[in-house]
Image (tube, rainbow, N blue to C red; front, side):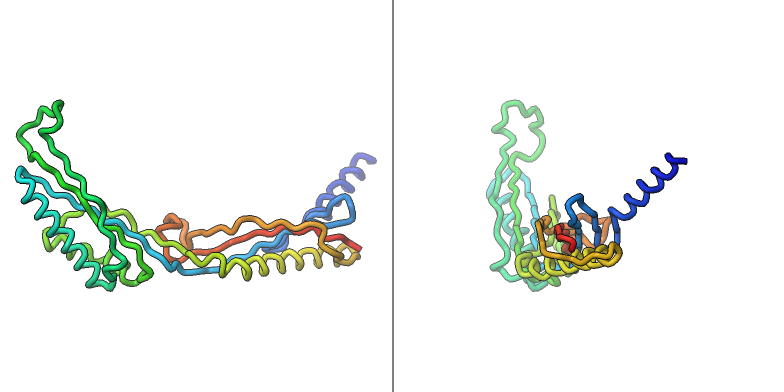
Length: 231
């Protein structure tokens, strides 16, 4: 019987020591204080998009190969500008030239001798233009431009510091609510702050099936931990 009583007291202590209240968690410590955690989330929209588009051209006449590549790059720049991406937001990538005959170990002498590769890098705040351009890539194909790679678009939220203060304030308020609830249930009052720590602000994608960088819609999340004295 005594073991049953001891077990019941221990179980009650566990229930008393830890509260989970939505976005709040409270834990009773051994020195008449309570440690509480509060979390807060904030939906945000990215303000910067990056995109990399690459093409290549091949042949046996280097000047003709370069001319073909230059034409393709010009078509890409015009395509982006058509969708609202200004020239200032588009940077040319370095060209690379491969000469098959310069490789003494290349036994395939029947193919094109030269391959010239290049591309553009986009960095813009015009997310709408990027979305339209991505959905209209078939226009480039119709102009004879075959992309060898398309990295992105990737989206970033660069105004984290502007949102951080409000986000942390919300999380701290949630932590205090947990402390107040705990104090109420234990017939005590919340005193001063003994210690407080703030976790890193997380930037999460809104949808779980895509990576965070692929999504313009994001969620900021932070957790704060605060120790309050109990009176």
